[in-house]
Image 1 (cartoon, helix red, strand yellow):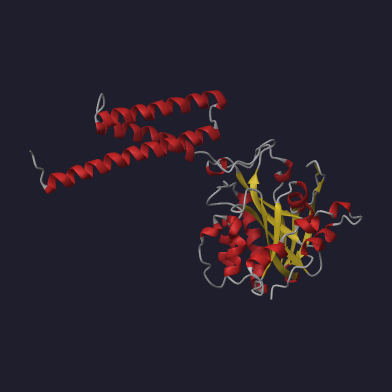
Image 2 (cartoon, rainbow, N blue to C red):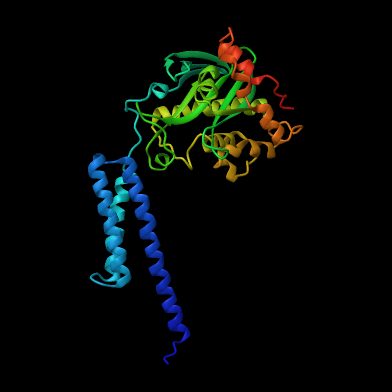
Amino acid sequence: MHEIGSREFFIGLGIWFLHSTFTLFVILSSIWLCLALWIQQPLGPIFSRIIIILWGLFALSLLGFYVSGHIFSRRTDILLYCFAFACSLLWYFSLDARQDRVWDPEVSEQLSYEKKGDIVKLHKVRNFNWYPDGSYDIHWEDRTIDLNKITGINVIASYWMGPQIAHTLVSFDFSDQKPLVFSIEIRKEKGESFSAIGGFFRKYELSLIASDEKDIVYTRSNIRNEQVYLFPIKIPAAERKALFIEYLKKADELRAEAKWYNTLTSNCTTLIFDMAQAISQQALPKDYRLLASGYLPNYLHDLKALNQNYSMKEWYQLAHINPRTEQYAKQPNQSSEYYSEVIRAGLPKTE
Protein backbone atom coordinates (compact mmCIF):
# COMPACT_ATOMS: atom_id res chain seq x y z
CA MET A 1 0.00 0.00 0.00
CA HIS A 2 1.25 3.44 -0.95
CA GLU A 3 1.78 5.66 2.07
CA ILE A 4 1.76 9.42 1.62
CA GLY A 5 4.04 11.62 3.63
CA SER A 6 2.95 14.52 5.79
CA ARG A 7 3.98 17.00 3.09
CA GLU A 8 1.74 15.39 0.47
CA PHE A 9 -1.08 15.17 3.01
CA PHE A 10 -1.02 18.89 3.83
CA ILE A 11 -0.71 19.83 0.15
CA GLY A 12 -3.75 17.69 -0.62
CA LEU A 13 -5.64 19.16 2.33
CA GLY A 14 -4.81 22.70 1.15
CA ILE A 15 -5.99 21.94 -2.39
CA TRP A 16 -9.22 20.43 -1.04
CA PHE A 17 -9.79 23.53 1.10
CA LEU A 18 -9.26 25.84 -1.89
CA HIS A 19 -11.62 23.78 -4.04
CA SER A 20 -14.28 23.75 -1.32
CA THR A 21 -13.91 27.49 -0.78
CA PHE A 22 -14.35 28.20 -4.47
CA THR A 23 -17.41 25.94 -4.63
CA LEU A 24 -18.97 27.73 -1.65
CA PHE A 25 -18.13 31.10 -3.21
CA VAL A 26 -19.89 30.12 -6.45
CA ILE A 27 -23.01 28.99 -4.57
CA LEU A 28 -23.29 32.04 -2.29
CA SER A 29 -22.38 34.62 -4.93
CA SER A 30 -24.84 33.09 -7.40
CA ILE A 31 -27.65 33.23 -4.83
CA TRP A 32 -26.79 36.88 -4.10
CA LEU A 33 -26.66 37.83 -7.79
CA CYS A 34 -29.91 36.04 -8.67
CA LEU A 35 -31.68 37.83 -5.82
CA ALA A 36 -30.23 41.17 -6.95
CA LEU A 37 -31.45 40.54 -10.51
CA TRP A 38 -34.87 39.44 -9.22
CA ILE A 39 -35.26 42.61 -7.14
CA GLN A 40 -33.77 45.11 -9.61
CA GLN A 41 -35.05 43.59 -12.89
CA PRO A 42 -32.60 45.69 -14.95
CA LEU A 43 -33.95 44.43 -18.28
CA GLY A 44 -37.60 44.19 -17.28
CA PRO A 45 -39.43 41.21 -15.76
CA ILE A 46 -39.08 38.76 -18.66
CA PHE A 47 -35.47 39.28 -19.76
CA SER A 48 -34.26 39.59 -16.18
CA ARG A 49 -35.77 36.20 -15.38
CA ILE A 50 -34.09 34.76 -18.47
CA ILE A 51 -30.73 36.09 -17.22
CA ILE A 52 -31.37 34.52 -13.80
CA ILE A 53 -32.07 31.14 -15.42
CA LEU A 54 -29.00 31.38 -17.63
CA TRP A 55 -26.77 32.38 -14.71
CA GLY A 56 -28.11 29.48 -12.63
CA LEU A 57 -27.36 27.05 -15.44
CA PHE A 58 -23.92 28.62 -15.89
CA ALA A 59 -23.07 28.30 -12.19
CA LEU A 60 -24.37 24.72 -11.91
CA SER A 61 -22.57 23.68 -15.07
CA LEU A 62 -19.39 25.32 -13.89
CA LEU A 63 -19.56 23.46 -10.58
CA GLY A 64 -20.19 20.21 -12.43
CA PHE A 65 -17.18 20.76 -14.69
CA TYR A 66 -15.12 21.95 -11.76
CA VAL A 67 -15.83 18.91 -9.60
CA SER A 68 -15.43 16.35 -12.40
CA GLY A 69 -12.48 18.11 -14.01
CA HIS A 70 -13.91 17.72 -17.53
CA ILE A 71 -13.82 20.21 -20.44
CA PHE A 72 -12.19 23.16 -18.60
CA SER A 73 -9.13 23.24 -16.41
CA ARG A 74 -9.78 24.26 -12.85
CA ARG A 75 -7.78 27.44 -13.29
CA THR A 76 -9.89 28.37 -16.29
CA ASP A 77 -13.06 27.63 -14.31
CA ILE A 78 -12.01 30.02 -11.56
CA LEU A 79 -10.98 32.80 -13.94
CA LEU A 80 -14.12 32.44 -16.03
CA TYR A 81 -16.47 32.65 -13.07
CA CYS A 82 -14.57 35.44 -11.31
CA PHE A 83 -14.59 37.54 -14.47
CA ALA A 84 -18.34 37.07 -14.96
CA PHE A 85 -19.09 37.83 -11.32
CA ALA A 86 -16.84 40.92 -11.37
CA CYS A 87 -18.88 42.24 -14.29
CA SER A 88 -22.07 41.71 -12.29
CA LEU A 89 -20.56 43.63 -9.35
CA LEU A 90 -19.71 46.53 -11.66
CA TRP A 91 -23.36 46.63 -12.73
CA TYR A 92 -24.69 46.45 -9.17
CA PHE A 93 -22.45 49.12 -7.67
CA SER A 94 -23.15 51.43 -10.59
CA LEU A 95 -26.76 51.69 -9.42
CA ASP A 96 -27.15 55.23 -8.09
CA ALA A 97 -29.74 56.41 -5.59
CA ARG A 98 -31.93 59.11 -7.15
CA GLN A 99 -34.04 62.08 -6.18
CA ASP A 100 -36.24 62.25 -9.29
CA ARG A 101 -38.52 59.21 -9.11
CA VAL A 102 -42.32 59.34 -8.97
CA TRP A 103 -42.64 59.12 -5.20
CA ASP A 104 -45.48 57.90 -3.04
CA PRO A 105 -47.28 60.97 -1.58
CA GLU A 106 -46.25 59.93 1.97
CA VAL A 107 -42.57 60.55 1.13
CA SER A 108 -42.83 62.89 -1.84
CA GLU A 109 -41.40 65.91 0.01
CA GLN A 110 -38.04 66.39 1.70
CA LEU A 111 -37.52 68.15 5.00
CA SER A 112 -35.71 71.49 4.84
CA TYR A 113 -35.20 74.27 7.36
CA GLU A 114 -33.88 77.72 8.19
CA LYS A 115 -31.85 78.08 11.38
CA LYS A 116 -31.09 81.32 13.20
CA GLY A 117 -29.38 80.63 16.49
CA ASP A 118 -31.63 78.24 18.41
CA ILE A 119 -34.74 79.05 16.36
CA VAL A 120 -35.41 76.58 13.56
CA LYS A 121 -38.14 76.97 10.97
CA LEU A 122 -38.94 73.57 9.47
CA HIS A 123 -40.43 73.24 6.01
CA LYS A 124 -42.37 70.20 4.74
CA VAL A 125 -43.49 68.78 8.08
CA ARG A 126 -46.01 66.04 7.35
CA ASN A 127 -49.45 66.36 8.93
CA PHE A 128 -51.77 64.06 6.97
CA ASN A 129 -55.29 63.29 8.14
CA TRP A 130 -55.85 59.52 7.98
CA TYR A 131 -59.08 57.57 7.43
CA PRO A 132 -59.91 54.01 8.52
CA ASP A 133 -59.52 52.63 4.97
CA GLY A 134 -55.92 53.88 4.81
CA SER A 135 -56.64 56.89 2.62
CA TYR A 136 -55.52 60.33 3.72
CA ASP A 137 -55.67 64.05 3.13
CA ILE A 138 -52.27 65.37 2.06
CA HIS A 139 -50.99 68.28 4.09
CA TRP A 140 -47.43 69.55 4.49
CA GLU A 141 -46.78 72.48 6.80
CA ASP A 142 -44.12 74.68 8.33
CA ARG A 143 -43.29 74.59 12.01
CA THR A 144 -41.03 76.85 14.07
CA ILE A 145 -38.99 75.23 16.86
CA ASP A 146 -37.07 76.80 19.73
CA LEU A 147 -34.34 74.28 20.55
CA ASN A 148 -34.23 75.56 24.11
CA LYS A 149 -37.86 74.50 24.58
CA ILE A 150 -37.17 70.79 24.07
CA THR A 151 -38.29 69.09 27.29
CA GLY A 152 -38.05 65.41 26.47
CA ILE A 153 -37.34 62.67 23.96
CA ASN A 154 -39.34 59.50 23.35
CA VAL A 155 -38.36 56.38 21.43
CA ILE A 156 -41.39 54.89 19.71
CA ALA A 157 -41.26 51.24 18.64
CA SER A 158 -43.91 50.06 16.18
CA TYR A 159 -44.02 46.27 15.80
CA TRP A 160 -45.15 45.12 12.38
CA MET A 161 -43.38 41.75 11.90
CA GLY A 162 -43.18 39.84 15.18
CA PRO A 163 -41.32 40.72 18.38
CA GLN A 164 -37.87 40.90 16.76
CA ILE A 165 -38.54 43.67 14.26
CA ALA A 166 -39.94 47.14 14.94
CA HIS A 167 -39.90 50.45 13.15
CA THR A 168 -38.19 53.02 15.36
CA LEU A 169 -39.24 56.66 15.57
CA VAL A 170 -38.01 59.49 17.80
CA SER A 171 -40.42 62.07 19.19
CA PHE A 172 -39.39 65.40 20.73
CA ASP A 173 -41.51 67.06 23.45
CA PHE A 174 -41.63 70.85 23.81
CA SER A 175 -42.75 73.19 26.56
CA ASP A 176 -44.54 75.54 24.17
CA GLN A 177 -46.08 73.31 21.48
CA LYS A 178 -47.12 69.80 20.48
CA PRO A 179 -44.52 67.04 19.91
CA LEU A 180 -42.66 66.47 16.66
CA VAL A 181 -41.63 63.03 15.37
CA PHE A 182 -38.68 62.10 13.16
CA SER A 183 -38.89 58.87 11.19
CA ILE A 184 -36.20 57.41 8.92
CA GLU A 185 -37.99 55.37 6.27
CA ILE A 186 -37.71 53.94 2.81
CA ARG A 187 -38.63 56.44 0.11
CA LYS A 188 -41.22 54.40 -1.73
CA GLU A 189 -42.10 55.02 -5.32
CA LYS A 190 -45.78 55.42 -6.17
CA GLY A 191 -47.49 52.04 -5.91
CA GLU A 192 -44.45 50.41 -4.34
CA SER A 193 -44.54 48.35 -1.14
CA PHE A 194 -41.83 47.44 1.34
CA SER A 195 -39.80 44.25 1.04
CA ALA A 196 -37.22 43.36 3.70
CA ILE A 197 -35.29 41.36 1.08
CA GLY A 198 -35.48 44.24 -1.38
CA GLY A 199 -33.94 46.43 1.31
CA PHE A 200 -30.71 44.44 0.99
CA PHE A 201 -30.43 45.09 -2.75
CA ARG A 202 -30.61 48.86 -3.35
CA LYS A 203 -34.33 48.76 -3.94
CA TYR A 204 -35.21 51.87 -1.89
CA GLU A 205 -33.76 55.28 -1.23
CA LEU A 206 -33.69 56.72 2.30
CA SER A 207 -36.20 59.28 3.47
CA LEU A 208 -36.32 61.43 6.62
CA ILE A 209 -39.82 62.49 7.61
CA ALA A 210 -40.64 65.11 10.25
CA SER A 211 -44.24 64.64 11.24
CA ASP A 212 -47.04 65.33 13.65
CA GLU A 213 -47.71 62.42 16.04
CA LYS A 214 -51.36 62.39 14.97
CA ASP A 215 -50.09 61.51 11.50
CA ILE A 216 -47.14 59.15 11.64
CA VAL A 217 -47.88 57.41 14.95
CA TYR A 218 -51.67 57.33 14.58
CA THR A 219 -51.43 55.64 11.20
CA ARG A 220 -49.49 52.80 12.82
CA SER A 221 -51.57 52.39 15.97
CA ASN A 222 -55.04 53.00 14.55
CA ILE A 223 -54.91 52.45 10.79
CA ARG A 224 -52.36 49.66 10.27
CA ASN A 225 -53.05 48.13 13.70
CA GLU A 226 -49.37 47.74 14.48
CA GLN A 227 -48.47 47.35 18.15
CA VAL A 228 -46.91 50.65 19.19
CA TYR A 229 -44.94 51.47 22.35
CA LEU A 230 -43.74 54.87 23.55
CA PHE A 231 -40.72 55.03 25.88
CA PRO A 232 -39.66 58.35 27.48
CA ILE A 233 -35.85 58.48 27.43
CA LYS A 234 -33.63 60.01 30.08
CA ILE A 235 -31.13 62.21 28.27
CA PRO A 236 -29.43 65.50 29.29
CA ALA A 237 -30.86 68.74 27.87
CA ALA A 238 -27.68 69.48 25.89
CA GLU A 239 -27.83 66.08 24.20
CA ARG A 240 -31.55 66.47 23.42
CA LYS A 241 -30.73 69.64 21.56
CA ALA A 242 -27.71 68.05 19.87
CA LEU A 243 -29.80 65.09 18.69
CA PHE A 244 -32.34 67.41 17.09
CA ILE A 245 -29.49 69.14 15.25
CA GLU A 246 -28.21 65.74 14.08
CA TYR A 247 -31.59 65.15 12.45
CA LEU A 248 -31.24 68.49 10.68
CA LYS A 249 -27.81 67.43 9.43
CA LYS A 250 -29.28 64.15 8.17
CA ALA A 251 -31.93 66.15 6.29
CA ASP A 252 -29.14 68.21 4.71
CA GLU A 253 -27.32 65.05 3.63
CA LEU A 254 -30.37 63.49 2.01
CA ARG A 255 -31.28 66.68 0.16
CA ALA A 256 -27.73 67.04 -1.13
CA GLU A 257 -27.38 63.42 -2.22
CA ALA A 258 -29.82 60.53 -2.32
CA LYS A 259 -28.70 57.49 -0.32
CA TRP A 260 -29.71 53.86 -0.30
CA TYR A 261 -31.68 52.25 2.49
CA ASN A 262 -30.23 48.94 3.70
CA THR A 263 -32.27 46.52 5.80
CA LEU A 264 -29.22 45.58 7.87
CA THR A 265 -26.76 48.48 7.95
CA SER A 266 -28.64 51.68 7.09
CA ASN A 267 -32.14 51.58 8.54
CA CYS A 268 -34.43 53.33 11.00
CA THR A 269 -32.55 52.01 14.05
CA THR A 270 -28.89 51.91 13.01
CA LEU A 271 -28.99 55.50 11.76
CA ILE A 272 -30.51 56.69 15.04
CA PHE A 273 -27.71 54.86 16.86
CA ASP A 274 -25.12 56.61 14.65
CA MET A 275 -26.62 60.00 15.48
CA ALA A 276 -26.83 59.18 19.20
CA GLN A 277 -23.22 58.01 19.11
CA ALA A 278 -22.20 61.31 17.53
CA ILE A 279 -23.70 63.39 20.36
CA SER A 280 -23.09 61.09 23.31
CA GLN A 281 -20.44 62.04 25.86
CA GLN A 282 -19.44 58.39 26.15
CA ALA A 283 -19.18 55.57 23.64
CA LEU A 284 -22.39 53.59 23.28
CA PRO A 285 -21.89 49.80 23.20
CA LYS A 286 -22.74 48.02 19.98
CA ASP A 287 -25.26 45.28 20.48
CA TYR A 288 -27.23 42.72 18.46
CA ARG A 289 -30.40 44.53 19.56
CA LEU A 290 -29.50 47.36 17.22
CA LEU A 291 -30.15 44.90 14.38
CA ALA A 292 -33.02 43.04 16.04
CA SER A 293 -34.75 46.39 16.50
CA GLY A 294 -37.70 44.94 18.38
CA TYR A 295 -35.42 44.55 21.38
CA LEU A 296 -34.13 48.14 21.27
CA PRO A 297 -36.19 49.12 24.36
CA ASN A 298 -34.40 46.38 26.32
CA TYR A 299 -31.08 47.81 25.17
CA LEU A 300 -32.14 51.26 26.35
CA HIS A 301 -33.19 49.83 29.70
CA ASP A 302 -29.77 48.23 30.12
CA LEU A 303 -28.18 51.61 29.37
CA LYS A 304 -30.38 53.08 32.15
CA ALA A 305 -32.02 55.40 29.64
CA LEU A 306 -35.40 54.18 30.91
CA ASN A 307 -36.70 54.72 34.43
CA GLN A 308 -35.08 51.93 36.45
CA ASN A 309 -37.97 51.72 38.92
CA TYR A 310 -39.75 49.51 36.42
CA SER A 311 -38.76 46.18 34.91
CA MET A 312 -38.95 45.69 31.15
CA LYS A 313 -42.11 43.60 31.60
CA GLU A 314 -43.68 46.53 33.43
CA TRP A 315 -42.33 48.99 30.85
CA TYR A 316 -43.94 47.13 27.96
CA GLN A 317 -47.27 47.26 29.77
CA LEU A 318 -46.92 50.98 30.55
CA ALA A 319 -45.59 51.98 27.12
CA HIS A 320 -48.21 50.13 25.03
CA ILE A 321 -50.34 52.85 23.45
CA ASN A 322 -52.87 50.72 21.50
CA PRO A 323 -55.19 50.11 24.49
CA ARG A 324 -55.27 53.87 25.04
CA THR A 325 -55.88 54.82 21.39
CA GLU A 326 -58.51 52.26 20.37
CA GLN A 327 -61.33 54.58 21.47
CA TYR A 328 -59.66 57.72 20.19
CA ALA A 329 -61.52 57.82 16.86
CA LYS A 330 -64.85 57.92 18.75
CA GLN A 331 -63.85 60.93 20.84
CA PRO A 332 -65.21 64.39 19.92
CA ASN A 333 -61.72 65.87 20.35
CA GLN A 334 -59.68 64.77 17.33
CA SER A 335 -56.84 67.25 17.73
CA SER A 336 -53.15 66.41 17.51
CA GLU A 337 -52.65 67.74 21.02
CA TYR A 338 -55.27 65.37 22.43
CA TYR A 339 -53.79 62.37 20.63
CA SER A 340 -50.35 63.14 22.09
CA GLU A 341 -51.92 63.39 25.56
CA VAL A 342 -53.69 60.05 25.11
CA ILE A 343 -50.57 58.11 24.14
CA ARG A 344 -48.69 59.51 27.16
CA ALA A 345 -51.39 58.82 29.72
CA GLY A 346 -50.01 56.93 32.72
CA LEU A 347 -46.39 56.99 31.58
CA PRO A 348 -43.85 57.46 34.41
CA LYS A 349 -41.34 60.28 34.39
CA THR A 350 -37.84 59.59 33.11
CA GLU A 351 -36.41 59.88 36.62
